[in-house]
Image (cartoon, rainbow, N blue to C red):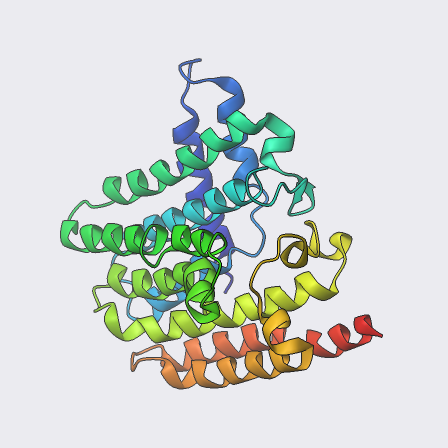
Length: 293
């Protein structure tokens, strides 16, 4: 059964609350919050989080929902900030104008900031009878958002003269996938540590696949500007390994992901989920090669 309706309903409720009522909030910023998260793409990270929670029993679904929303809000904030002129200066995102193009650069900065704060507010509000779990969720999300190994660190690597590609990928993309698997386990009352490897492997696979798409697809296909890694001289798997090498690396990562799933009641379900994600990423390899001509 699709988890998307559950994610969308919980996200919409959080955004509606953040927008305020009765004219007590700035209208354009309130609109920008909704614009930044809608439509939300595949909602991959919160789907993984809820899948892990389900595999571990999901005995606090309200807390799992809050964790999923908080993670997606942080991800959406990172996209708003990534698109700013000081970073990618992207005109489009998910097939429509980026937030800074649609609402202005100052409002885009405030939108990203507001979404980050809202993510942590959602977790705090959901603590209820599980304050210990909520605190652990807040800590993991904080670690995977900031420094030294969160998405802020990932962005920071792009300003370094010498780049550790593995550390860069782990921070820029892997961090929120690690958060997804660990937060899903925590929300269901399980230890986070055994779930780090699975999140790291899924995250690295998505980053390598994204490097391939950026190098070989056009902007219309991607729904955002293409060729950004080359334009901004970013470290990426294609530049370091070549197309064929990047494809081999992608397959190697995915090959180890299933084996890294910790023992849990829903282990078989999670293995199927990883296989489905692998199928979504790996069949594009022939298309990549055809695009290269």
